[in-house]
Length: 172
Image (cartoon, rainbow, N blue to C red; front, side, top):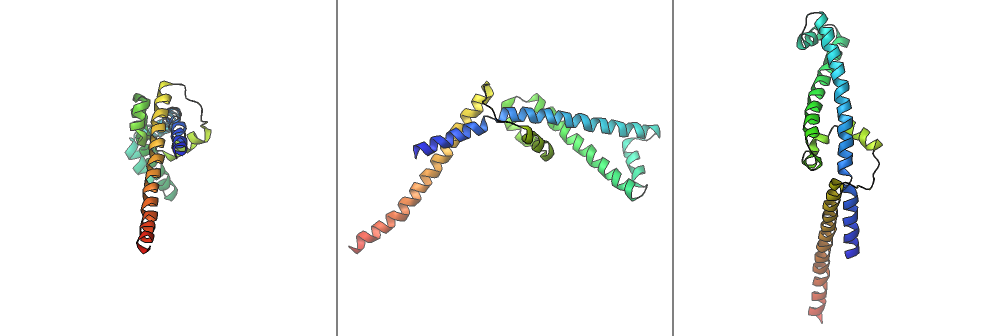
């Protein structure tokens, strides 16, 4: 059972030690996404300014231009909202170190960016302090998880077969 617990610890170490690099690559992609959305919004705002309209007035004007224009106005609103959310996440994550990023892991939740990051991510041996710390935490977590599962199974096994043995002893 100890070998299985150590294997669980090693698996936890290997997995969790990858977090610092994954989060860094996520932040890089997040920055690219925010930059691209910023360019789109700036172009929209510039088009609106040509007609002496602010963003909201331009969106309202666009909504009144037919079904296609209304659909486009709605998509621009979603882009503006996504830009605001991603910009806030980027600001927080850029200021965070690798340990604080773990605390702010919920900000790594944009599915599109996380999927693209994961597709290009290649696990590697972490040779940084952060990678070592996350690896150590992963080892302890895996060791404790597998050890805990083993303890529960041993308890269940003892209760299950202990009762049968006790019943057999009473019959004899």
